[in-house]
Image (spheres, each protein chain N blue to C red):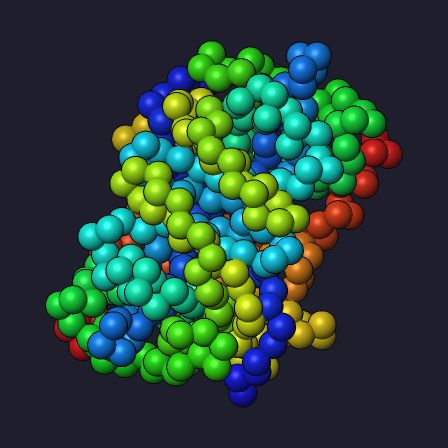
Length: 192
Length: 192
């Protein structure tokens, strides 16, 4: 039975974006954000939406840059932890024993242990209400050679990313089985 | 070994968003989009980025509304198919045998067979280059009663959504195992 329900910000799956920034004092910080996604192909852009209460919000405004680090599932605890505490109160890199490395392209830190990172320069801000959307142009990518496809692209089966089940389950999941090839499996329908 | 690579629009996982719209002639259409995500909590907003070449781009501009329908994994072929053909050339609802139902809240169709749908009114457009970002305020949600959690929220384990592995695998995947509870499993790190 179909039910009409109140509006909810439930997108399934939602990503686990670990946003890397520097403070004005040069201190690296990371936070866990779920409100974001790719927003343009040319130029390549990604958005992440943040509340003004976060340190990352102010760091992005000041530095004009951020990284989007994708954790593999084995960094479950670290990813959850950096979404629970503020960089104002502690050094999240130190507490998680993750390693910040300066991006060669943008003024933001890369999480060394994570399989790949998108390096972004802030190009636009859109105020929406509780959240401000920061749109970053992806100017480069850093990846572990072991997670790449033959075309030098991050392969989901090697990256083993997490995903967030949003408010319905309030839990993280991993990737399951391959269902079919994109731009391909739909052809079977045409023949039916 | 860490490699510095060209910029890529690879976010893992990426969602499978089936965007429902009406044309100016009242004809319902659906397309498969991966560039989007939740962008604000209050008001609840979601973005979807589209190329001007798509029929959906023009339908959203004219109707000022769209739906985001989340397919369960059993609609793999249908989801892929509606991303491969244009609504200018065919009736995608007819060809997929999916059923359009008018949203009670917005001027856009709901895919009856899919487990849940976000109903959106267009509130902002952001031109970025190849893609224009359409930001919709989520004004309601329609869901099958069987996919809801005890709090009446779509439960990922019941929705069984698909995800897209982006350009590294060019394939769809399903959801795997629950890894741990959000805002909880990170606490274990604090004790270490």
